[in-house]
Amino acid sequence: MFGLLAAGMVAGVGTLSCVDPEARRAREAEESRARIATESARATATTDVASAGVWTDALLVKRLVDAGLAPQRRDSVRAQPWMGVPVHPYRLGASSIDAYIFADSTARLARLALLDRVTLAPAGQASPWGASHDLIENGNLLAIVVGGTDRQRDRIATALAAGVGAP
Image (cartoon, rainbow, N blue to C red; front, side):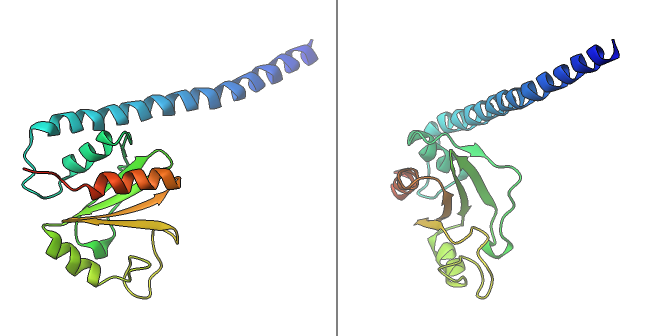
């Protein structure tokens, strides 16, 4: 009797361990869909906002959504202190983007002049983005793209290189 009860418990535990990863994946997928929907709603609301020719977080999201990239904000990411402005971090499928929005292009160029162009960090410091990253510069925007496929990185670069549009 005890052997039968123990076998049933082992089978039950095995079943639970099989269900947990599936339930976790379903929960993560639902959370991902909710984050994408939030950013898409922000992009839709941005259509009526004049850009004044400078990047804002809302315009960044709009460009990414319009390019079909489904951005998801990464709330746990903190700005690199040497950038001097807040970071606007997003996950875009297998890629991630850390966007820094400066007051104007002059401020972006001045900040970038202080950094090693290869590491995007102060001289002598390792890159927080690893060895493989792409830099996108446009107006007051400096964006670092990490990971993903070549096609995905090209889509991101194309979306951001188009600029903010007319006010």
